[in-house]
Amino acid sequence: LGVSNDLLLKHLASQFITKLPQTKMQELSNMIWAFAKLAYSDAELCIAVAARSVQVVSEFTPQETVNVVWAYATLAYMDEAMMSAISGMVLRQSEEWPPRDLANAVWAYAIFAVSDDKPLMDFVAVHCIAKVQTFNTQDLSNTAWAYAKSEIQHVDLLHAIASQALARGDSVDARAMALILWSVAKV
Image (tube, rainbow, N blue to C red; front, side):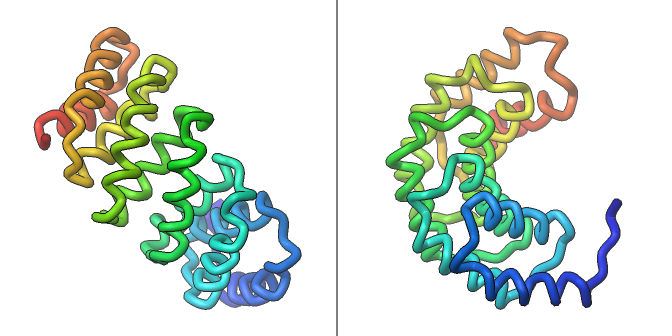
């Protein structure tokens, strides 16, 4: 709907903060995602959710993790402790992650240009290459864009993505092809 009421959102954010200790991970990730989708940034909320996320990071599913990092990237709110905790969790679990979640996670890290997360990006690249055939077109283009944007050169990953795009031929839309081409040219 695109309807936003700042007074209502401020009230909901305040209420959500008080309920954070009892909040389930899906509720936490959905709530911060919804605030980001509404472009509502509240520093107190972001600080509280980040602190809680650090405490419970091992309980997040891949989708919940991606919802949180996507929300923070969308809100342009960087919390180093949270991103570091999530990075560690991704390093431990990314082999099990679906392609969409891998693509969205590297997208968020690229938005933040987290320079000390090269080990994470290197690790994820290996898993992306192994799963590249299962990526949909958007996952391919988002992943290529993320690595080019972060200026982390993974020639093998970009080659695998470009090869997949070529193999899919006409089914790759112009936007995805442009992002993949831009990514290859940038590296």
